[in-house]
Length: 269
Image 1 (cartoon, rainbow, N blue to C red):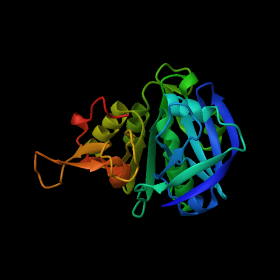
Image 2 (image 1 turned 60 degrees about the vertical axis):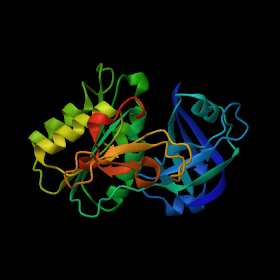
Image 3 (image 1 turned 45 degrees about the vertical axis):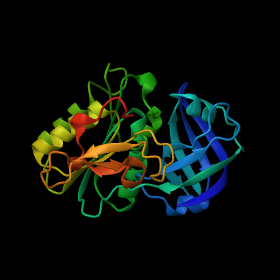
Image 4 (image 1 turned 90 degrees about the vertical axis):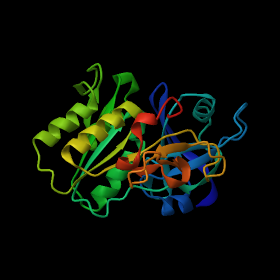
């Protein structure tokens, strides 16, 4: 983890509320792995005092890709930052995805939660690991990628209303894939809405597949001090009381078998 100031080099609008940012932070980029995130300070933004955590969506040389959706004051302020602005970044933070023992990867993303899986897809392809990426959203207007990138990455696209890609939940596509393919060596990686990841976890348990989930809880400090991003987990020893972990430093990537999905509530984002 380091602190680095770098320029915003590119900003591309995908939809009115979804956009790509490319930051020039070569030192952070060099240390980053899929699943990690940045803590970004938005200087000069009225009412925005805390840094904002943003998943790393990719690395291109010394540039870091961030896929952002406007959901509040922080992301609204970020959308207004002009190209050329110097940004203050802390990163990379968090535990990345582990693909050391995988021979076939299934990536399952929902909405803007697909961002860290883009970086993971790049890393897996770089390691010549067979990878299938399923990415869904509610509608075409909320789909986080443009059609050209979907085609280039061979992504299985789905929308709830059928306006882009297949109609229905993306978890249905995953289940259909598993019904028609060998499961040997398959590992599943997910990030997105809570209900989607719960369903993916149910499917993985049905097929007895390892599953890593990246959580997107709210974070204040990013280093485990404020305790604001705690999630309930089991301890793996049958203790029904379970325990708690911090998304910012113990995650954001967790073994999905350890997550107490039933008790994740409205505090989860």
